[in-house]
Image 1 (cartoon, helix red, strand yellow):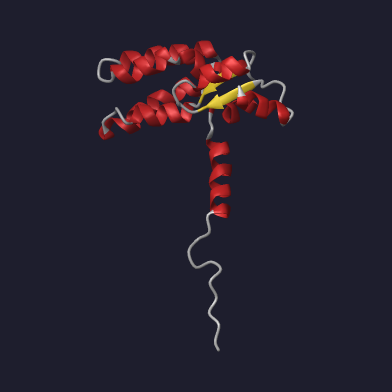
Image 2 (spheres, rainbow, N blue to C red; image 1 turned 45 degrees about the horizontal axis):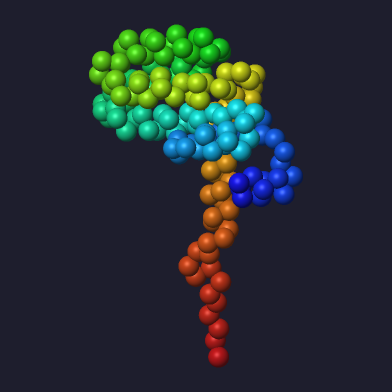
Length: 151
């Protein structure tokens, strides 16, 4: 509840959509605080997690077959592409396909939005890039302000 108060004190009254990484319980926490918020799991994080379970020799081919899923024009087209992916790779990598199927509603929320704005919705990479820049500014590199003085 303290988080909600903090967000309200900052002027946030409602959140349209929240893209989150795969942190367990995060979608539920958002829903409990802002029940009208649409939650989108980060597709890039899900892909990275999936690749950990795919043999390196298959990763390039798997990703080529996977692109039609997240680049589809519609959710129905994405589901058809996911079916095709499962037909080709499901027997070899059932855990990966099951992970996508079990999280599909949270992974496919971005299809409700125009194609032009989907990428910022389906990935947290932009936010992570800003955070990375903040960390660079707040953590001083060694020797940055060290100056030698001659006496």
